[in-house]
Image 1 (cartoon, helix red, strand yellow):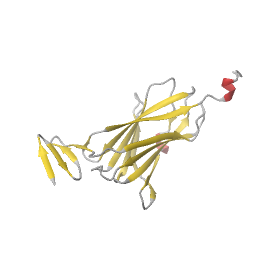
Image 2: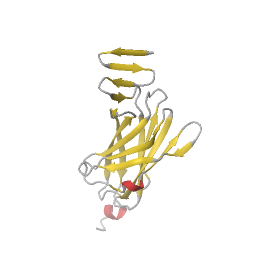
Image 3: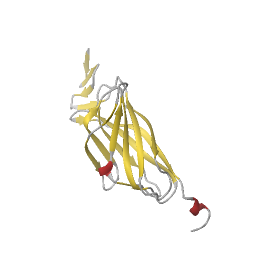
Image 4: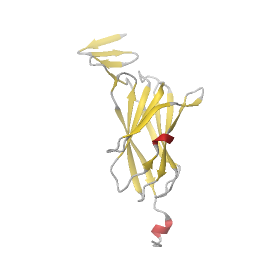
Amino acid sequence: MLWAHAGLSLSAHAVQLANGKTYFVQPPRFEGATATQKAAYFWGSTYYFTLSVPENAGESLQAVMIAPEDGPDRARFDVSQTEAVAKTKEQETRVPLREVTQDPKTRAITVTFDQPVAPGSVVKIGLYATRNPDVGGIYLYGVTAYPTGEQPYGQFLGYGRIQITDPSFFRHGFF
């Protein structure tokens, strides 16, 4: 089944515009974010971001961008230690990564999978923070998903919220 009109191709499998851009038919769903350690200034926490790729996505998930919003401080990530795991009904497997980059200005991290994550999967991305922010508060991370294709269109999925707490010695006036 194929429908075409005004430069738009829509099939049961994908959406591709005449200019070559690919889109998800049904975008992935951002399920949430969490951190293994939530204390301010903590050294060595992993921030997990979980996405589910629906069966009717139309395209596999090729990349995810995780962009910190401006705040009083930022976590410091070691992108070389990024990992990802995909889960289907049948199994859970480590997902090899083609590359992980961090924009020096925006600090956005883009995780590109070596093999795209197939529809019907849940993927959990772990970003290793060498140090949590120095200041407690709620830190927001914008999550954008990119389908396979030579010109993928990024679909913004929402914000991951990581709450960082000030250590108790700061609250009790020891410093």
